[in-house]
Image (cartoon, rainbow, N blue to C red; front, side):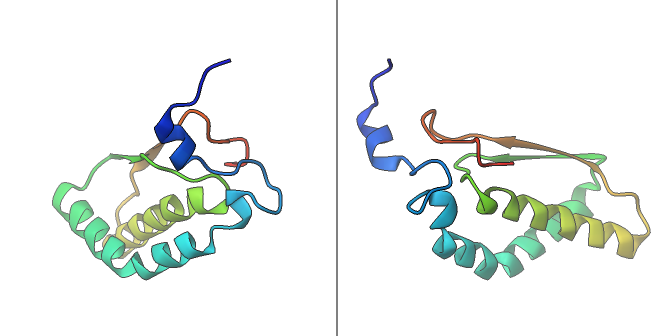
Length: 110
């Protein structure tokens, strides 16, 4: 059994889908993501217009488990698809990488 580092003890999430799990207690984080949406939308539009990529790769370096994990990714995809539709362009292919502390529970991601 691997020993937890001090950082992992401090930065862990309550795994699973129980009453005290991160997946069921992350409304503050979701509200912050919703509040940041206009900034995200502007930034993503600028990147798309500048690069017009055929493939767009995203990395979530501190991703959550549960419903918030895919929330921002789905927002990015929706923004790009709307921009492409307005320009009559095909949307790019998307690739997404999720990464976090080894002890966090990704079973609830999908």
